[in-house]
Image 1 (cartoon, rainbow, N blue to C red):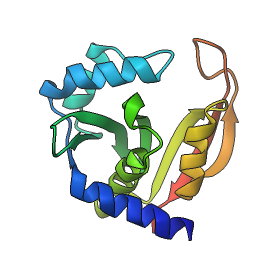
Image 2 (cartoon, helix red, strand yellow):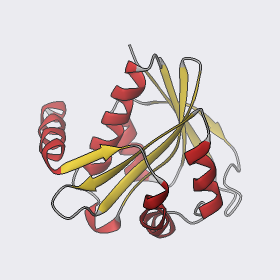
Image 3 (cartoon, rainbow, N blue to C red):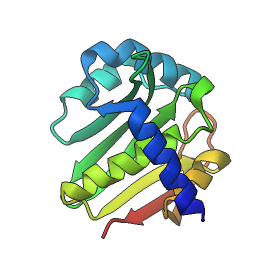
Length: 163
């Protein structure tokens, strides 16, 4: 039943959201979301670098009605593997299925590109993100002790196989 509900959410957002590769003109909106979403946000230079890396995969989500950027995902691809580096949704749009929609769409695109495994690290205290990843069949596979330099918090390593 849960996947049926997720499917409805995704179909609903498919009609309301445009997903496309991030562009330099998106940086201000991306930075605003980033700074409000993470304790140690990425810098403008980090995002600029990502936009130019050959192995970087990124999407932004814009509302079709207002053209407002409401979320994004940045990944790295290497061979048949990908790593999710950052996924965020604008605070006033959270808990509405947008993160699920962005992530499901990215996973589908990555699978089409020959990616077989997707990896990520997430703060052990980020329960909502962990719940999202588990709903989309990511499995915990390890722990990186003291991974986050800002707090020394551990990171849960999660993996999903795309077959």
